[in-house]
Structures are given as C-alpha cells and as structure tokens.
Image (cartoon, rainbow, N blue to C red; front, side):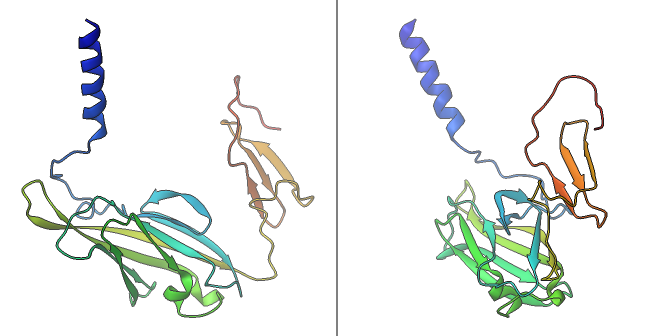
Length: 208
C-alpha cells in the first residue's frame, strides 16, 4: 500500500508538471480578443492585452520600458521564434524586434519606440502591439500564431504632481472606502490615491 501511495504521488506530480501538447482549436485574435502578454511602465506583473503607461513630460525615454513576454520553450527553425511590432496611434509602424529562441521576454526602451530622448505631450495615445510566434506542433510541423495588444500612453505636464502613490498628502478633500474595504482619496482637482492592497473586513459596507 505504501508503494502504491508513493507511485500515485509521483505519477500525479509528474502529470501536473507538463504543459498540454494539444493544438488549440480556437484563436484569440480571430475572436477579436487582445492577449499579448506585457508588463513595464512600473507594472511588475504581466497582464493580458493592455498596458497602461503614465509618464511625465521631459522624462527620459531611455529609462522607461515595455516588456513583451513569450514562452521560452518555443521550438522553430530560426534563431528567433517570436517577433514583436509596435505601431503609433495613427497606424504607422515604429519598430520590429525579435525575441531569441529560449528567451522568455524582450525589454524595449521607449526611446526606440518614440525616437526621441524625452517624452512630450504628443506621445500620448494608443500604441498597437502585434506579436507573431512560430512554433513546432506535436507532429513536428512548424506553425505560426498571432496575438495583439494595446499600450495606453499618458504623458502628464512636468509641473504636475500625481498622488496615485502618495496616501498622506494634505490636499485630499474626500476620503471613503469601497465595499471591498479599499480606501479612495480625491482632491478637489481630482488627483487621486487608490489603496492597492486593501485588507478584507467582515460586516456591511459603510462610508467614512
């Protein structure tokens, strides 16, 4: 019985550690779903489809990045299996990058996207990201799949001070909590602070 228990534990553990080798019959891009995996602009965790960037006017574009993620296990015939293209809001392409085989991401500085040393107000807008990924299926045949994403870029005036991470500013005029116990603070100029990790509480919802 002890041997059987150990065998089942090893078997179940191994079966859970392998990814699927089944070709997906559905396509996100054909269903108009945005699923490019991106992070950056101060966002540590990767997200699907959208990336929101808030930068300050005159801030260096060399110190801010977008990060595009891809499976590192890809197998294809070339030295790179994933190709990333970024487009301006008007549809003009701005750059194309290749992610080398075996790498899980590429880090692209905004300097290479906007082609200037510092952000200005004209950089605001929605940038499109198109990703082409080559891979070999379970039958050994090379295929290609696609994903898309959007980067929402906001460039604020250099004299402006955001309070999104400053919970103690004296200018907050309204303070209240949501039903999930998240603290929200707003000034009369609608600069805001949103609590990022509220602690859950028991009981009914009550405003401050």
